[in-house]
Image (cartoon, rainbow, N blue to C red; front, side, top):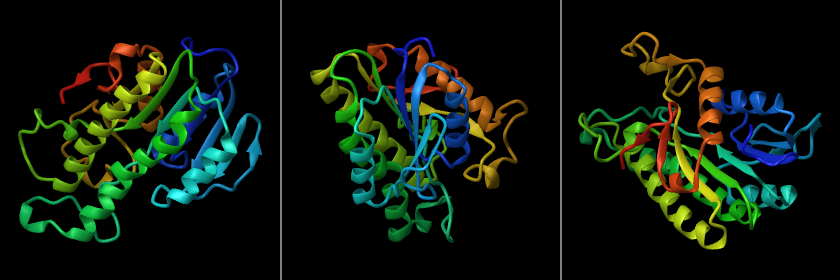
Length: 243
């Protein structure tokens, strides 16, 4: 990636997921990064393979986020939160408001909104105080309020919209410390992962991406980011997603 200094450090939260693993593999092939920190629930603290160092992190447990941040220490030039939830453990997207359930809504917000916010709380201070630093979190086009034409999927839509507001707040605050810090949401498209698998039937031809293709496109978007992009959500093709 051309926009980062040589021997840069990257962090991927959710590096064992479909998109996260693809991002990790792609960055692992980029000689410009000195260390890529892979964070996830299944990783062992301190395990290292080449330039990739693993850290345990549970997005729903702030203590593990704080501990991972302390072990990494910084500086972090690229921080990507590649996590998200849409369904699981008896929880599916709501087709109607009648299906809304408090525990399901809370779980969706814990992972899609609160988790990335807590990662920012503990790791944004590790970004450079001068020069380029990027915090990116996977968002979704359905988190756009102005683009919502169909309704439904209440918890997922609302949690991603809330994430987008958090990212805008982070962008405003981070710029006071370093105007070259960029905080963005990334819409990866519809990717062939466990998250989208039950909902792929209606995806148009050519619009279901492999994790590897999505990761490659997202990294290209990241490489082209400018400070004026901070606070926005950008899609895999570089287009700005409406708020």
